[in-house]
Image (spheres, rainbow, N blue to C red):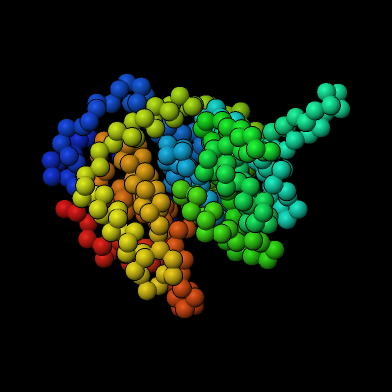
Amino acid sequence: MNNPVELAKDGGPPADTPGYTGAPAAVDTEQAASARAALTALRAEVAKTVVGQDSVVTGLVIALLCRGHVLLEGVPGTAKTLMIRTLSHALDLDFKRVQFTPDLMPGDVTGSLIYDNRTAEFEFREGPVFTNLLLADEINRTPPKTQASLLEAMEERQVSVEGSARPLPDPFVVCATQNPIEYEGTYPLPEAQLDRFLLKLTVPVPARDEEIAMLQRHAAGFDPRDLSAVTAVAGAAELAAGRAAVRGVHLDPKVAAYVVDICRATRQSPSLQLGVSPRGATALLATARAWAWLSGRDYVTPDDVKALARPTLRHRTQLRPEAELEGATADGVLEGILAHVPAPR
């Protein structure tokens, strides 16, 4: 999210608020309220090691609530790996990292059958994909064949080897990184795989004050490999309770139509040769509901949709070459669409 979206602290809405349909379908249980508080506290916990990336952490929490995958784009040195490691520590989830390289094979990611001389049988040796949080570092540096090895895992949450399907742990989220400025020796992700990512989050360079604070931490002896100061404030149980609560968030038919109108407008934009698919519309609905719940509401507003439109849709569009030559960007096109598609009142 380019503009950080702060977690709301307000109370109930006025009766005429778009997206509000009256009484909630179900009152928040104590467990759901506790889960929201724990997941909200994640930002402060991650901030113990990573400075100035609150909006990115919020996006990662939304992805976990939606059981979706995240593509992180940022220049080297913006603490993408440290952020995912810290998040897994604060959530008490299993974490594994794979450095994607040109010679990486699909079996290096998913696992493979190994012949055991003692038993004279083949046994399956799990790959790093069998984890809760998988960091696919520089995913665009490996050939399409290895990139495709993640497709089944991301979509079906299982790995098939020799005809046998092996389920992945729950939760399972892929956090892939890519460098936006270095394209030599890279393999751009195909549209089919990009569409599997729920969010594409831009990891910015910290502001001046935040960078000064970061340097002061390092001068005081901060070690990015030492996460002992990070406490597990939530876990799989809180994520499960949060997901259940998100499914109970109200969606007004007018807000649903607003989501569809935004996505249809991308298909008609003269600047885009590829618009958002119906899967993108369902993704925007899911992320808007998760954001509404994190904000303390049980209904979705048009502002929730606008807040999540860019990170949810930017990677599902493709600019026309002539528009790209004129300096257009996916975010800029989406900004124009959000300004012109009328929001429900």
